[in-house]
Amino acid sequence: MFEATESLILSIDYSRSFYDDYLGISGADLSADSIRIAATIRF
Image (cartoon, one colour):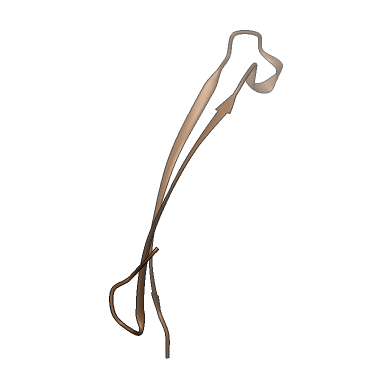
């Protein structure tokens, strides 16, 4: 989280998830990456 100004806050979140044996299928391993970028304004 970074406070750019007194009323503007910027943030970036990163997440990685792993799914072993997806849907019960042996060997069906999946992974997912997600990035969230947000700007918050305080009044």
